[in-house]
Image (spheres, rainbow, N blue to C red):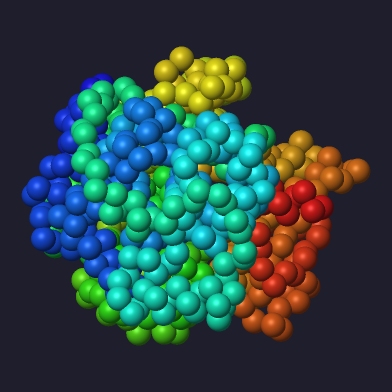
Length: 551
């Protein structure tokens, strides 16, 4: 690898390169881990734990069902639509072991969004939580799905507990709308099919996941992540954490949904490799229940997004938890605000380490060295990853100048599913164009200025929402803030703030005065609007686009 400027700042012991061919496929990684860790706990949810050996057995049974009862062939797509439950890793690894391609599907999708993703991917089967099956019923005729496997929240909890949970969810909380899908089979039945599993031959360049982008810049596209892509990123993450985490000694809290690429690669695959206990949180938005779950474990790793960390540190019960085992807190998915990082460290005693990536990169491209306090930086490129800043003409710019961040490495996708034109727009040779405006420093650290499409143009000046939000977020009476550009006759665009109050006494004039003290005139908001909540993605990322559309 070239002598890149960032390599001198790697933590001692972190390799400059990884071997993306160490495993031919995810199957090889899985088989090594279940053999190595056997009776150790693999996944836990709602007090129920399955071991690596049980995960091996159950996913093998599910793979056998797909091969022999559903008659799926290698390369067929299997959609999985559920939150964090024990059923997810069983279905996901089972589908991969059957040679299928996994299509991760957000449970919060509307029927229209489901229809697009299922039809676009050509999925032949779906594993879906019963809570969302009513949406599937309305659109299944417009898809290629022939096999529907339904599950309920308590299905794998066993005994009386599982029955009680399912009864309460269905009949007391009425969270399962009526649906009727002919031929649907229950998930637990697929594990008792009695068929034998036949291991397919999988090559590294074959697609493992169709991971759909959020669709914020148009129609949602399926990023083709190969077995090599996922293995490479898993190896890069493990190399970055080398020396900090020990085999079979770690407990990770997984609040981010496993169908999201951040949790899938970092929480699932990287932790699978080291034999960690993976505690799955089904509904992290229920903060009291989430914190109660956390209190039952001496957890050592926690990943999340800025809004999740912000919500936790504002809960008094969270600060009473035992953080003595916590060694690693990693934020991604959106920018980590400085005020949140500082509060997190004060509450837990552990640095909130920011990383950066995107779906098309499986997803991690850069990360700060673990334990460092480089606030406002997305860190250094991971091993075997090259990152550079380019101008609008596709030319690299000098260090210190703002431009679009490009990246290349073995974790970069094979392209968008059946969309060669969209692939060509996103790739510049073997460089992935991220769509993020960034700047590099002399010591090889990178910082995101903002999303290219979110930039606000005020009288010819570029105003970056991240900067405005970073200034307003530390205000003692502000809980959450989002900045967007609104049309303005005089200045092309102007800044509008959307704020969720932490203190009900907060006024618009207080915010305006605070901004005037801390921002130059053209960056100050023209409008301020208070909200009870801000629109977010499934992982808690604030959707500026939705706010802008409302304007």
